[in-house]
Image 1 (cartoon, protein in one colour):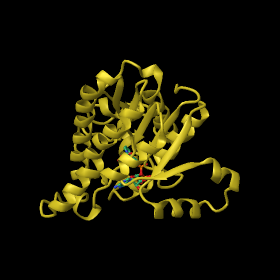
Image 2 (cartoon, rainbow, N blue to C red):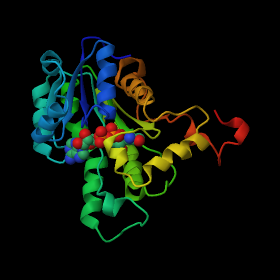
Image 3 (tube, rainbow, N blue to C red):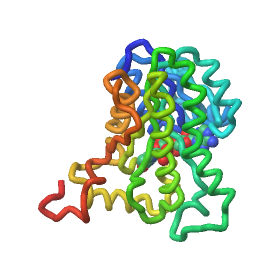
Length: 265
Ligand SMILES: NC(=O)c1ccc[n+]([C@@H]2O[C@H](COP(=O)([O-])OP(=O)(O)OC[C@H]3O[C@@H](n4cnc5c(N)ncnc54)[C@H](O)[C@@H]3O)[C@@H](O)[C@H]2O)c1
């Protein structure tokens, strides 16, 4: 799945519900070394404070660095420090929920729109730029997307950012192919995390998925399936896959209309 003994950077750890945490766990399970990143030093402290009950050896085992992806110098410093790596996951997004999500498609908060685009889409290119020199034997960069082929209620500008993110994946796959660095996205179904909780109407997505996903979909348990796909794309079994969006959504993305009652899991 991933290369045993090699190092993988997993960016976007907030808490143990984060998709990043699940991806890191899978990489470790397959024998890889994981370097997680959180957004800031303060968030690193919050992460460990929240997990006070952990044994000190578990805390010591976790390699957590901080990096704000909108600060070019921090991204550069991170990858200068990590040494040779075989893959990176960018599991990061943010857009002001008041102006970028919700019932109204706002156009009067352009700074929020720019911030959302910077964090959620353009930052993948910053990460790729500074990660690539550390992937001397090639490697895999993976990011996390959501249903950009359709417009979901309330998702508004984040849906636009996800479409931009997927276009960035293709541009980067083209740019970094000569260095044998692959760039792909996993488009996940709805999963229970902090970021998802900030999306107005997120709970309704669970109901929606039960009507459009031919496979049963569990927003808690299926985080692991999403993490497996991200690990696969970072690893050597995906050596000739680049510029793709792999849907790990129970099949919801290919369904026209809703499943009929006899088709439901
Ligand atoms: N949860 C879902 O239903 C779902 C579905 C599909 C895709 N995704 C995507 O998965 C990714 C991870 O989200 P999650 O659901 O694990 O939520 P999460 O809240 O656990 O993770 C989001 C992460 O983005 C980080 N972040 C925000 N701004 C940053 C910045 N400037 N620099 C560095 N980090 C920053 C946050 O600190 C956090 O760690 C996101 O791209 C999200 O859109 C989530």
